[in-house]
Length: 202
Image (cartoon, rainbow, N blue to C red):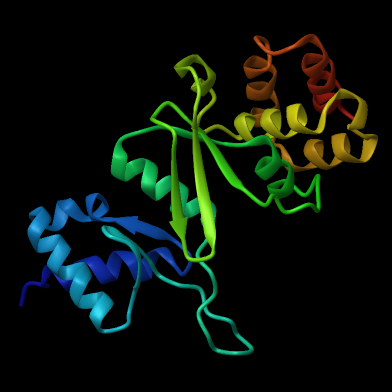
């Protein structure tokens, strides 16, 4: 018997693991938009997935000790919203620094740069802020370099330590270091100097 659209949707969701966020668009290979919407609605009604906003769902992470659902992964939510609206987004400097472990400060605002319009989206207790920037700012979108350069620029020249440089160096492959060198060329001189230190063999 052929699998139903609902079964196919849940197979993809469960196969991706908990914490991922999806939009209707992610499942259009399985059927029409209406059929996919109905399939997602059935899964939501069964308690198998969580609806975060109309057309946006996640496969919630579970607290192993308490058993309840954890808050959604905000970065995954942001990228799902970007897919839904056909826009590009890039993590902000404060979020990037926290993500890389260069800062323990958790930003109060979850800001993402975008080539789309300015907007705010409330997800549970969080507010996602999409801040419009010129399209040329988005050239690193989707690259590892994006996160690193955004973080370094946010921290600032005078506050970057040797430990931070080592931490970044240790997380990069040789290929990623080569790409970082290419991507930093159009940035400020001090960022180029920092990247040179990062890619040095130690």
